[in-house]
Image (cartoon, rainbow, N blue to C red; front, side, top):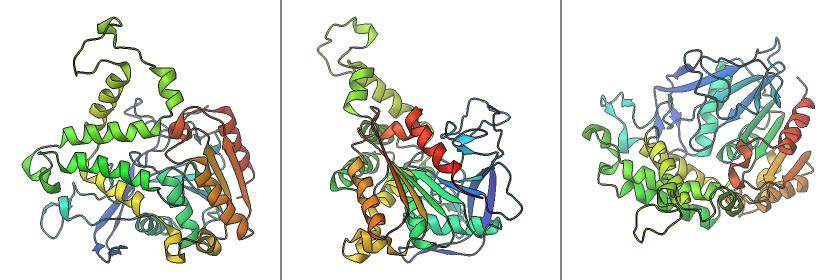
Length: 374
């Protein structure tokens, strides 16, 4: 298949964006990439919404960096399930993220210093409003589809409620209508790991030329555990010890098992590229998302305004966003007599399955998009 070579782009918005908190942010930028060609009547656009640590770099590799492969490259591209020979695909980096869009690390024009702790809390709904502005500036009146996995799926779902006439299809993968108490608890532990790091400085660590690396590492370790299933961990690591121990107990507290070494590696890698304030913002946006809250917890009532057709996909070993949460969405859609296709994939990889290659999963998404008219 032809390899995509996208060019990162940025769009500036001078008008202030009013946020759910009542605060606003002005003079912000959104980083984005596009793949494929927008057709004459601009009816073939697909918006991809990203999850926690992803970005606008959805697919392909850069001309000057063939190691940086898009996070959903197995899903988007020529001849792939979201076929860029047919669709014009847009990837947007969310406001507050650390991959090019205006974030806590950027300079606040009113002070000339990094926003840091003063950067306002953002929600899924705020992100969707910002995405809608970008889509409008691209001259697109109605999207063929909005698609996302995990937190991205929440954004796709929110599009159908905030802008029901602006999309024809919603593809919601490995997601949920809100977070469980257990999920909020995991997010809180990760945030405390960051905020109690002595190098965090209340979120203003940029001015101190430090990085709360220890906190970020711990946060990622906690989060990463929730992305994998017990089966996946057991198959990959089991109870094996690291090679230097030759299978023997060290009777100490340094990493000894392979799973410990793996988590340490993931934490270290994450802390080398991700921003601590961004982690706080994104996990809190996850916590707040709950479209049924305004309807006394009635998800069917919340989804009554949706008009799109839906594909909902879940994975059997995903305990972070378990299949029953996707079934809640499906039931609410059926209650409203909306057109919905549902696939529950028997996969062993846990929550991460939505990013991986699985023939059944890939086939479901491909078949659905083959039926999306442009």
